[in-house]
Length: 65
Image (tube, rainbow, N blue to C red):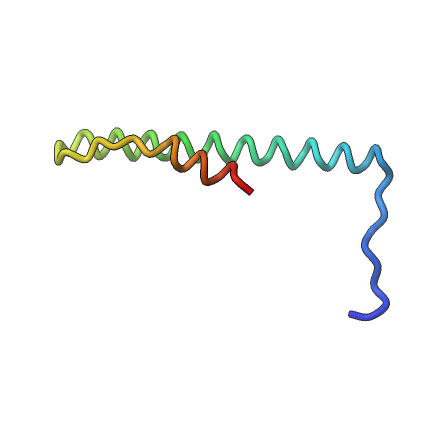
């Protein structure tokens, strides 16, 4: 792809894009926590001794770059 240049954004456009991306990632993390919470509740309801809450671990993995 010779001769292609990255799109040029104004400072304001970049700030808008950043805020949108941050909001999307926050929503993704919240969704992930919700799914893990439901999963943990189901595991507990099975009564097989699996009661480890790994919501914190997953949220840490998601938030680390």
